[in-house]
Amino acid sequence: MRKPIMAGNWKMNKTRDEALEFVYQVQDALPSKEKVETIICAPSIILRDLVKRQGDNLRIGAQNMHEKDSGAYTGEISALMLKSTEVEYVIIGHSERRQYFNETDESVNAKVKKALEVGLKPIVCCGELLEQRENGTTHEVLDTQISKAFADVCEDSLSNVIIAYEPVWAIGTGKVASPEMADEACGYIRSLVEKLYSKKAANEIRILYGGSVSTKSVNELMAQPNIDGGLVGGASLKADSFIELCNACVK
Image (tube, rainbow, N blue to C red; front, side):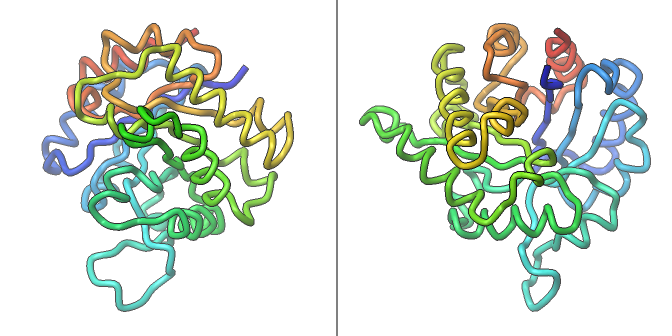
């Protein structure tokens, strides 16, 4: 059985004090790490503070990284810098990075390979726009994004990779794909992994759903066979709702 994951993406939210208060509130209430992999992906400026206080059942991740080790890239953070803070995870290719910061499938691939090279676990995002869903090209979009994201990534590395399906039309909108719709897309992504690698790899890789996941929708989503957890935005900002989301992952 694949261990479920609940990953919070705080985006550009929380000061250092607010973040520390959140960690203190949740750390004794989260399910055991043996049952659920619980992650908070926070702004880079507070990562080290959170790592030092994460506790046994919470792990900290970053929201982005640059694919180069160093250089004249003002404002960017390298994978080696993240590794030095002792974070374990990094989100790569989130739709907001693609939309607002012009990230491409090729840059996602470069970041995935660099993250794996330095020992970070990438949470690789994919998902379609509303018009792509409506015109019936969701599968083609996912095929392109997955095949390009994993170009030259060996199967042995997949045990350290998480995929997040996040339909762009459902992010921050309050709209949620139906459980069946989300499961179908995650199942298709799983079939793409099998096509690229093997049935074993497809069965073992964990695929999250992201898109306005809430305490109201999480139970139905987690009941689907191809959904292994959530990549959650707004509902991860409050301690009580995040705890509830994590507990919903216990099967």
